[in-house]
Image (cartoon, rainbow, N blue to C red; front, top):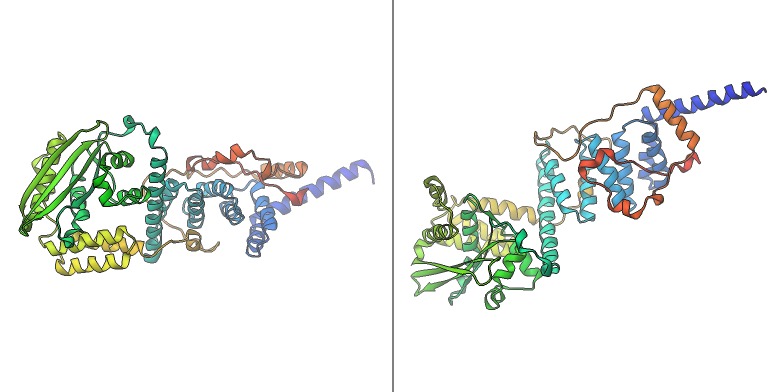
Length: 456
C-alpha cells in the first residue's frame, strides 16, 4: 500500500475514532458505563469513562458531578470539592452535586461554605422531610462552627487584637442565682435569654448568639460558679468577640421580691464596669426585666424611638411558671438533653398556650434531636434529579454556562487528545495548588487534570 493510501486510511480511522467518541458521550454511553463502574466500585474504569466525556469538549454537568463524587468516595476530598464546585457552577439546581459538595466542605471543616451551600439548597422546592433533614444538618454545622470558633479563639487568645472587635457587638452572659431557692436556677439562662431577645431589637448593636456561650464555656472547662468566682466575664466576652459584656445576678428577697443586678463592662477598657439594678415584686419579673433593658440601653448611649420602646415592652408571657419551665428547657437543650428539654417546653406551652417563644424552641429542639445527618445519604441517586426552583437571591456560584463548541472544534479537540495520548496525572498537581483548590466563586474556572490511562 502506498504512503498516500496509508495516510488516507489513518485519517479515516482517526476521524472514525473521533466520531465514535463524540457519539458515545453524546448518547450517554460513556456516562452510563461510568455510572455502572461506580456502582461496581471500579473507580479506575469510571474515571476513564467520565474523563472521556469531559475531554470531548462537552460541558457535561452530570459527568463532572459523578467525577467529583468518585474522588469523594476515594477520600480525595480536596479534589472532590474542586470538581463538585465546577459541577454546581454548570448546574446550580443539581441537588446531588450540592449535597456531596456540602459533605466535602464538612470533611475539610470549611463550615461557612457548607452552611451557605445548604441554605441555598433549602430554598429549593423540597419535601417536608427533606427540608427537615437539611435544617437538622444546618443546625449541626452551625454548632460545629461555633465550637471550632471557640477552640480557635482560646488557642489564639494571646494574639487577639481588641481593635478588631466591632464596638457594636454585645454579649449577654448567664445571670447567677445568689439565693437559696434552687428551683429558680433555670432563670439564670431565662433572664439572659430575655435580655438577648429584647436587645436584639435595639438598632445599632449586634448581639452574640446565645448558643455560643455554653459552647465556649465547655471549651474553657468553665461552669457558672467559675464564671463568677474567677471574674471571668471580661475574658469570656473578649473570646466571644464582644466589645460590651452584660452579666449579673439575681436574688429572691423574702419570697416576694426579686432583685436583679447587671454589670455592663467593655472588653477594650480594663476594669470598666457599670452596675445597674432593678428590684420589685417577683410577680412583676417581666416588667423588671424591661426596665433593666432600658437602663442598659441608656448606659450604652442609644436613644430609642417610642415605637422601638413599645416593641421592646411587649411581654411574651404573664405566667411565671411557664417562663420557669421554658428557662429549664433552655438549660436542658444547652446540655444536649433534648427529650427533657421538650418535656419542659411542652409544660410551658400547657401553662400558657399563647407563649410564642415555646413553639420555636420545640421546633429547634426537635431538629437537634435528630442527631448527626450524613449529607451523602440524602443525595438522590444519579438520574433521579428533579428540577428545583432557586430563590431570587444572588448566589456565590456562577451559573453561566459555557458555549458548546461546534462539531469541527470538537473533532480537533479530540484529535489533539489522541495525539497527546495522555493528560498530566493528579499526582503531578503540587500540594500548594491543592490547598488553594479554589472557592465557590471560581468554580467555573477549575481545570480538571485527570489521567487517561486507557489512551496511553
